[in-house]
Image (cartoon, rainbow, N blue to C red; front, side, top):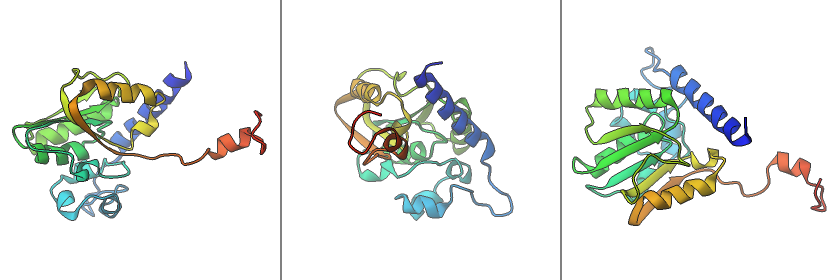
Length: 201
């Protein structure tokens, strides 16, 4: 197995486990460990969270709110990369309205199934969840107005390929709204491999 395949399998396994293990405790009626307090710190509003099913909030595992950047307009097509349980798809669906469409793309079968179940329960007709990888999107060229992503691109072993695919599927004038983690310096692992003078270890 190549390093790229190993990384993808590790990510898929981790999020598959998350999808099957996170449920709503009946005693509290709220979600753990993706609590509403954490999501409020990540830029979601109280009104947004109150509009979502608890089963959607429970599956959230991002690091920001890409739908809150003012990029999404009525009647547009939005693509969410690594949509997971669908929190940002659900919020974007309200912004595009009945004339728009939101596509959630994820490579984890368990997450896709949970997201589709939640969308069906909510009666959403303007959302769709597709199975696929963000390095090779099952999306037509120049078919998307806005791409959103919430702490997913950092997990890809081929970030250049992800951005090439984003450029391919975006319409001319399309926009990106991305919340993600960025390394500002070498990791502890890289520092251990590099001597202080910068020479190769």
